[in-house]
Image (cartoon, rainbow, N blue to C red; front, top):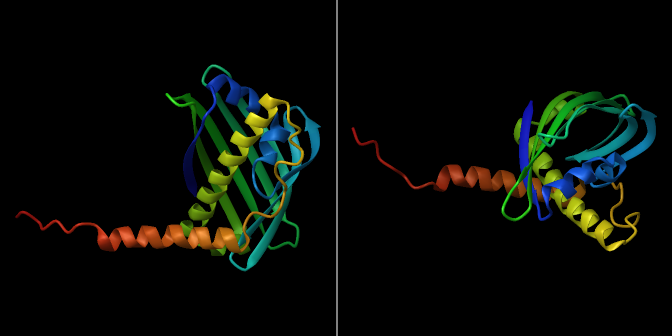
Length: 194
Protein backbone atom coordinates (compact mmCIF):
# COMPACT_ATOMS: atom_id res chain seq x y z
CA UNK A 1 0.00 0.00 0.00
CA UNK A 2 1.42 3.37 -1.02
CA UNK A 3 0.84 6.22 1.44
CA UNK A 4 1.95 9.76 0.66
CA UNK A 5 2.21 12.71 3.03
CA UNK A 6 3.78 16.14 2.90
CA UNK A 7 4.62 18.72 5.54
CA UNK A 8 6.53 21.98 5.76
CA UNK A 9 9.35 22.90 8.11
CA UNK A 10 10.03 26.60 8.61
CA UNK A 11 13.77 26.20 8.08
CA UNK A 12 16.04 26.51 5.02
CA UNK A 13 16.36 23.36 2.91
CA UNK A 14 20.10 23.00 3.54
CA UNK A 15 19.56 23.04 7.30
CA UNK A 16 16.78 20.43 7.10
CA UNK A 17 18.93 18.27 4.81
CA UNK A 18 21.82 18.42 7.34
CA UNK A 19 19.35 17.31 10.01
CA UNK A 20 18.54 14.25 7.86
CA UNK A 21 22.24 13.30 8.07
CA UNK A 22 21.76 12.52 11.77
CA UNK A 23 19.55 9.43 11.62
CA UNK A 24 19.28 9.01 15.43
CA UNK A 25 17.93 12.59 15.63
CA UNK A 26 15.48 11.93 12.78
CA UNK A 27 14.29 8.67 14.39
CA UNK A 28 13.72 10.43 17.70
CA UNK A 29 11.18 12.70 15.97
CA UNK A 30 8.89 9.78 15.08
CA UNK A 31 6.53 8.89 17.94
CA UNK A 32 7.11 5.31 19.06
CA UNK A 33 10.45 4.87 17.25
CA UNK A 34 13.70 3.99 19.00
CA UNK A 35 17.08 3.17 17.48
CA UNK A 36 18.78 0.48 19.55
CA UNK A 37 21.99 -0.13 17.60
CA UNK A 38 24.04 1.37 14.79
CA UNK A 39 25.19 -1.49 12.57
CA UNK A 40 27.48 0.58 10.33
CA UNK A 41 27.21 1.32 6.60
CA UNK A 42 23.98 3.31 7.12
CA UNK A 43 22.23 0.33 8.78
CA UNK A 44 20.39 0.49 12.10
CA UNK A 45 18.51 -1.82 14.40
CA UNK A 46 15.47 -0.44 16.20
CA UNK A 47 11.92 -0.71 17.46
CA UNK A 48 8.65 0.95 16.56
CA UNK A 49 5.58 0.79 18.78
CA UNK A 50 2.20 1.65 17.24
CA UNK A 51 -1.29 1.34 18.65
CA UNK A 52 -3.94 0.52 16.05
CA UNK A 53 -7.27 0.56 17.80
CA UNK A 54 -7.14 -1.89 20.71
CA UNK A 55 -3.97 -3.59 19.42
CA UNK A 56 -0.50 -2.37 20.41
CA UNK A 57 2.10 -3.59 17.97
CA UNK A 58 5.82 -3.52 18.83
CA UNK A 59 7.98 -4.14 15.77
CA UNK A 60 11.70 -4.86 16.04
CA UNK A 61 13.83 -4.88 12.94
CA UNK A 62 16.37 -3.08 10.81
CA UNK A 63 16.48 0.02 8.65
CA UNK A 64 19.00 0.82 5.95
CA UNK A 65 19.57 3.99 3.98
CA UNK A 66 19.67 2.69 0.41
CA UNK A 67 19.91 6.04 -1.34
CA UNK A 68 21.04 9.54 -0.36
CA UNK A 69 21.07 12.09 -3.19
CA UNK A 70 22.56 15.38 -1.97
CA UNK A 71 21.81 17.26 -5.20
CA UNK A 72 18.13 16.23 -5.32
CA UNK A 73 17.77 16.31 -1.49
CA UNK A 74 16.28 12.83 -1.52
CA UNK A 75 16.77 9.95 0.92
CA UNK A 76 15.40 6.40 0.71
CA UNK A 77 15.17 4.09 3.72
CA UNK A 78 14.32 0.38 3.53
CA UNK A 79 12.93 -0.89 6.84
CA UNK A 80 11.48 -4.23 7.90
CA UNK A 81 10.62 -5.92 11.13
CA UNK A 82 8.45 -8.39 12.97
CA UNK A 83 6.07 -7.90 15.87
CA UNK A 84 7.79 -9.00 19.05
CA UNK A 85 4.79 -11.16 19.99
CA UNK A 86 4.75 -12.90 16.61
CA UNK A 87 1.53 -11.24 15.41
CA UNK A 88 2.81 -10.07 12.06
CA UNK A 89 5.48 -8.43 9.98
CA UNK A 90 5.97 -5.08 8.30
CA UNK A 91 8.18 -3.88 5.48
CA UNK A 92 8.36 -0.29 4.34
CA UNK A 93 10.30 1.63 1.73
CA UNK A 94 10.29 5.32 2.73
CA UNK A 95 11.32 8.07 0.34
CA UNK A 96 11.67 11.65 1.57
CA UNK A 97 12.33 14.53 -0.81
CA UNK A 98 13.03 18.10 0.29
CA UNK A 99 11.97 21.11 -1.79
CA UNK A 100 12.55 24.79 -0.96
CA UNK A 101 9.44 26.93 -0.44
CA UNK A 102 8.91 30.62 0.27
CA UNK A 103 8.49 29.81 4.00
CA UNK A 104 11.09 27.05 4.43
CA UNK A 105 11.17 23.47 3.22
CA UNK A 106 8.48 21.12 1.98
CA UNK A 107 9.12 17.46 2.82
CA UNK A 108 7.31 14.95 0.60
CA UNK A 109 7.21 11.46 2.11
CA UNK A 110 6.05 8.31 0.33
CA UNK A 111 5.75 5.05 2.20
CA UNK A 112 5.37 1.77 0.34
CA UNK A 113 4.02 -0.31 3.21
CA UNK A 114 3.50 -4.08 3.31
CA UNK A 115 1.76 -5.54 6.39
CA UNK A 116 0.86 -9.02 7.50
CA UNK A 117 -0.79 -10.32 10.64
CA UNK A 118 -2.74 -8.18 13.15
CA UNK A 119 -1.88 -4.80 11.57
CA UNK A 120 -3.07 -5.96 8.14
CA UNK A 121 -6.66 -6.32 9.41
CA UNK A 122 -7.08 -2.54 9.52
CA UNK A 123 -8.30 -0.86 6.37
CA UNK A 124 -6.27 1.45 4.18
CA UNK A 125 -8.26 4.45 5.46
CA UNK A 126 -7.37 3.91 9.11
CA UNK A 127 -3.72 3.13 8.32
CA UNK A 128 -3.51 6.26 6.14
CA UNK A 129 -5.13 8.38 8.85
CA UNK A 130 -2.75 7.11 11.55
CA UNK A 131 0.17 7.67 9.15
CA UNK A 132 -0.97 11.26 8.51
CA UNK A 133 -1.16 11.94 12.25
CA UNK A 134 2.28 10.44 12.82
CA UNK A 135 3.70 12.62 10.02
CA UNK A 136 2.18 15.74 11.62
CA UNK A 137 3.72 14.81 14.96
CA UNK A 138 7.02 14.01 13.22
CA UNK A 139 7.00 17.45 11.52
CA UNK A 140 6.31 19.22 14.83
CA UNK A 141 9.04 17.26 16.62
CA UNK A 142 11.50 17.90 13.78
CA UNK A 143 10.83 21.65 13.84
CA UNK A 144 11.29 21.67 17.64
CA UNK A 145 14.56 19.72 17.46
CA UNK A 146 16.08 21.81 14.67
CA UNK A 147 15.21 25.00 16.56
CA UNK A 148 16.60 23.56 19.82
CA UNK A 149 19.85 22.49 18.16
CA UNK A 150 20.24 25.96 16.68
CA UNK A 151 19.84 27.51 20.17
CA UNK A 152 22.26 24.98 21.71
CA UNK A 153 19.54 23.32 23.80
CA UNK A 154 19.98 19.63 24.70
CA UNK A 155 17.52 17.57 22.68
CA UNK A 156 17.47 14.41 24.82
CA UNK A 157 14.37 15.55 26.72
CA UNK A 158 12.37 16.97 23.81
CA UNK A 159 10.61 13.79 22.68
CA UNK A 160 10.16 10.32 24.04
CA UNK A 161 9.79 6.98 22.34
CA UNK A 162 6.31 6.47 23.79
CA UNK A 163 4.15 4.20 21.65
CA UNK A 164 2.48 5.96 18.79
CA UNK A 165 -1.21 5.70 19.21
CA UNK A 166 -3.38 5.39 22.21
CA UNK A 167 -6.63 7.19 22.77
CA UNK A 168 -5.53 10.57 21.40
CA UNK A 169 -4.32 9.26 18.03
CA UNK A 170 -7.41 7.05 17.85
CA UNK A 171 -9.65 10.10 18.27
CA UNK A 172 -7.64 12.12 15.77
CA UNK A 173 -7.82 9.28 13.21
CA UNK A 174 -11.57 8.92 13.79
CA UNK A 175 -11.99 12.68 13.24
CA UNK A 176 -10.11 12.47 9.92
CA UNK A 177 -12.33 9.57 8.84
CA UNK A 178 -15.50 11.50 9.76
CA UNK A 179 -14.31 14.56 7.83
CA UNK A 180 -13.59 12.37 4.79
CA UNK A 181 -17.09 10.83 4.95
CA UNK A 182 -18.67 14.24 5.62
CA UNK A 183 -17.10 15.71 2.50
CA UNK A 184 -18.73 12.98 0.43
CA UNK A 185 -22.20 13.74 1.79
CA UNK A 186 -22.02 17.52 2.01
CA UNK A 187 -20.30 18.48 -1.23
CA UNK A 188 -22.56 20.80 -3.22
CA UNK A 189 -24.85 18.90 -5.54
CA UNK A 190 -24.29 19.68 -9.20
CA UNK A 191 -27.00 18.29 -11.49
CA UNK A 192 -25.95 16.55 -14.67
CA UNK A 193 -26.33 19.14 -17.49
CA UNK A 194 -27.51 16.59 -20.10
